[in-house]
Amino acid sequence: MGLTNNDIFKKLRVAHKLRDDDIVKVCALVDFKVTKSELGAIFRNENHPKYMECGDQILRNFLNGLIIHLRGPMPEKKKTSPDNKNPK
Image (cartoon, rainbow, N blue to C red; front, top):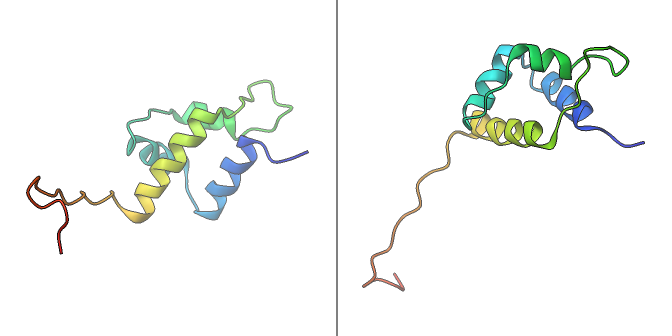
């Protein structure tokens, strides 16, 4: 059986030495709200009654926030004027 979203999330948390507070801040970088209790449920053992599966949306937003956290925000693209369609 392959890795689940929960497994990937756990491995990234350990690899980057992130705490729950850090993960909340990383998700906030992409305007995604996640609570510490939700994170606790995601990081629990599968057999625990309060275990929650990590959905694609949570993992996707965390990954996008992690990119911003590690690299910084994406720089603005230079706009070309209509007169200068082929700048030299």
